[in-house]
Image 1 (cartoon, rainbow, N blue to C red):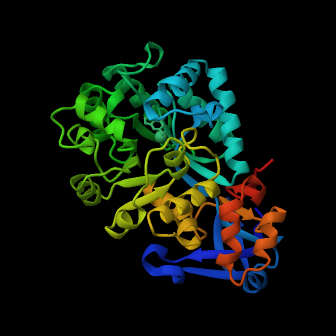
Image 2: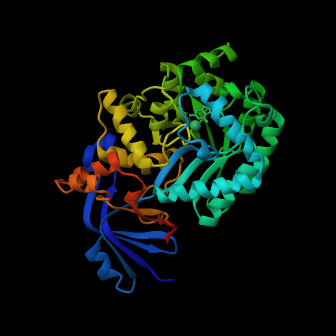
Image 3: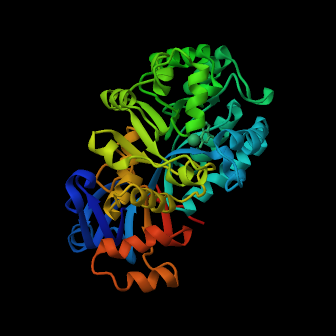
Length: 428
Ligand code: GUN
Ligand code: ZN
């Protein structure tokens, strides 16, 4: 098999810029990535790699910035068709737009059509890995993993479990949630690039019996991730308190049912109490910031500075379709804006790190989100002058961060010149 040598600018991280500042990242203006059999085998200066690998096929991407494909750590692929629906807050938004759409996924043909559409949109936007909720229907999980497998994409997903406070067409039971999740886990977890994720939607739509059953399943498969929602909106938190009067706080509804752990992913995590923060940190659980969703649904301002400083594990996500975009660039921009509203502007190196390595860390996968030997060759070429508006600003830039920031703030799928998955170009 031939080796491919991709030439362009690189930004390489060897630390977390939240702790080490800009120096955690190295800019290589004439860099190269060597790809063999779907894996990155070398990264560095173009001149040195060209000399060392003269027989490789050279692909010169000019001054494009080569980066790991974005990692979206929390999304709902079944909400593709209802993204950007107007005017509701969380609970009304779920009842008005989300649940009727998710009910359609009992039809495997519809589920597969949306899964294909969704993954092609991700690739167009430079996202190579997603961790997605499906619907209660096992066929919705098969559809996404089949579509991912056709593209050889690294995808994490699970059957969403709900046995109360949802329409009849969208309710399972404690037992069927356990049985269906267990069967899907056996079918998909570790198949190719698929990882199964145990997925109780959130405490309001599960009975204590269902949370217990899924906690039991997780105890049987502790290597699996478990994903859910936590403390997104104040009305939601009040509802959780009324449904679980014994609970010390929202997180306790998961904790007492075996659903708190290092491999847990907690989407939103905005209005956390001190005890919840302590317990999340003690477990090293993953917190997933969903900034376009938090502004779109009006949920609140994630405390990136405080949570990062206290040592939480944090990733970034679109939360499509509560989030108003498929783009991790747009998510970075919204994270920047929320940081500004909290008095802490995030540096472009921090935004880029969150969208790649930070999210990969929450998914416990060291082989994605990085440009490093041994990583999967899931990478993208970004045009830092993709529109006239961006080009005229980046033309004035004095360094890579100033050149990149207009793309973060104003970029969309036009930024992504190409997306490679396991070394193969897939953007249509
Ligand atoms: N909480 C429970 N379900 C959902 C969902 O689908 N989207 C968002 N944003 N929050 C939720
Ligand atoms: Zn969500």
